[in-house]
Amino acid sequence: EDQVTQSPEALRLQEGESSSLNCSYTVSGLRGLFWYRQDPGKGPEFLFTLYSAGEEKEKERLKATLTKKESFLHITAPKPEDSATYLCAVQAPGSNYQLIWGAGTKLIIKP
Amino acid sequence: SQTIHQWPATLVQPVGSPLSLECTVEGTSNPNLYWYRQAAGRGLQLLFYSVGIGQISSEVPQNLSASRPQDRQFILSSKKLLLSDSGFYLCAWSRGGAYEQYFGPGTRLTVT
Image (cartoon, rainbow over all chains, first blue to last red; front, side):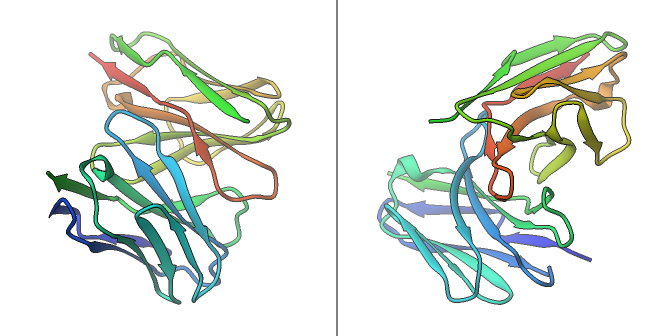
């Protein structure tokens, strides 16, 4: 079964303490993996698209990487404003429209 | 640049009442449009998507329906709300042929 699993469910860090969020998938023939940030009560904000193993994308303190079975969202020296839920999704095989979503990782950065 | 609007932001409705949520996109033509529902602590559930005016595909059998009367307008409706329809409803758009989707601010629906 096509599935996306994110871990951990929640992560608490001190400001400046770097870490990584994980997104593992069991989709064959990956056509795209997406990372989003979601603040409470708001819609998800698009961050990155990754298409092939070895690809990396960066934005400010965030770097997304992709292997054949998982993706990592590395956060370097986080600040309290990086606190949010980070969602991962993959393009469903055989569909141009459907994304398979993970449940998200809630990241809390304490000052 | 492209902008997506949703309204209302919050809605409290009694069981059995009708529903109409509206979504509009600015700054692009012929977008693919999507309605999602998000339950607390869970992933997004795709409800409907549309690749053009009058073209609606349903992903989940439910008490809801969708319509696309204009190119950049997407409406989510119900004739009679159920308690289980409560949730956070999100509209999204994507460019034809591209996969990444861009979301609106969402509508928090509470059915009492």
